[in-house]
Amino acid sequence: MDNFEEQEDLDDNIIILSDEDGEEISFEFLDLIEYDGEEYVVLLPADLTEEDDGEVVILKLEDTDDSEEEAYVSVEDEDVLNKVFEMFKERYKDEFNFID
Image (cartoon, rainbow, N blue to C red; front, side):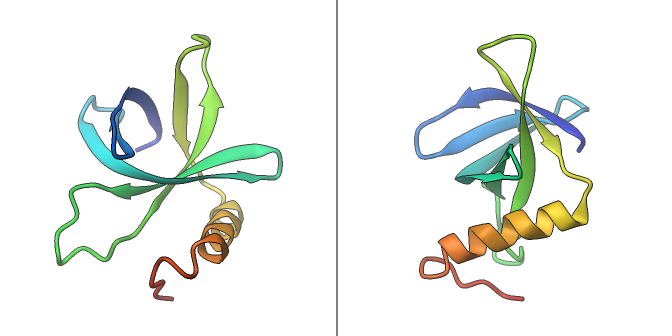
């Protein structure tokens, strides 16, 4: 899933994104983190089952030509992903049970 476009922002922090195949996926918005001059969203898939491990998704927020729409782009740089996730973990260390 390389490029996501926000389609709908619902109450309860649920965001519905479309992947490159046009398939809709629901996510719970957890946080917006600024790192190295860029903004990243931390999302949790909304359709988790008990078997799922609760992995978050980190996407880079980018402006589009349409000033009212933003794009969410996957992050390929492992160092950036790790730094953003560490910032998220530090911010929410008392609210979530992180498993390393």
